[in-house]
Image (cartoon, rainbow, N blue to C red):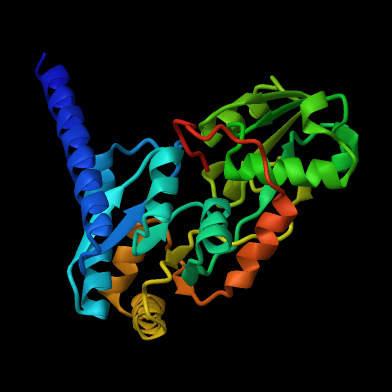
Length: 293
């Protein structure tokens, strides 16, 4: 009972924190207040509750505040509607999955501050003894992907499209958890799976004897973008602070905590325009409840 009570207490606290923070941030932006707003989205496939995300990014937020010399309100967002609203109302900074960040750059004039040094790839994986050799061989086979409209799903869709295979016409199932995709592949439940290169499965699949039959072009990973209201000087100050994080022990610990152990680098906003042009616009539900990786 004590465990259930504690879980319930944390869940309620997370909900209150998310609602209050989101409402406060929206009010600040609507009133044109000077306080800066940092919106964080880790994707619907993440298992962390809102309060975990807030605590984990607290030190990162402090770095942003120190670089800009101004207080920052941090908001953890878990759904597409809230994220798009944050872009429309001008959240100062947004850290979200790359294709969504690309929408902010293309549609709302956001600019890139930094991206992870580690690029991302979508990997088409098969078991060691699979007869499949290339992406062309997956036509007519059973395919397991991340959630529909997830970042890696969109990349897989574009790769199949480029190889004249329609994902809509294939036997495709999806799972939120990429570890579950790996387990399902190991258990021979599907012919081919799609995972992110930076996932646990992606990092270890070939080391454990599996094969990768197709790898996407290099795509950006973990971008931080800035509203048009943020000056070029402010962006440069923040970029310098974030790029230099890996040079100190404390900074390296912060990077590891937020899942960017390799550090940040500068990137052109045109990289994201090219990404969204390649992925293509999808008829995504405007009120989609979750945003997956």
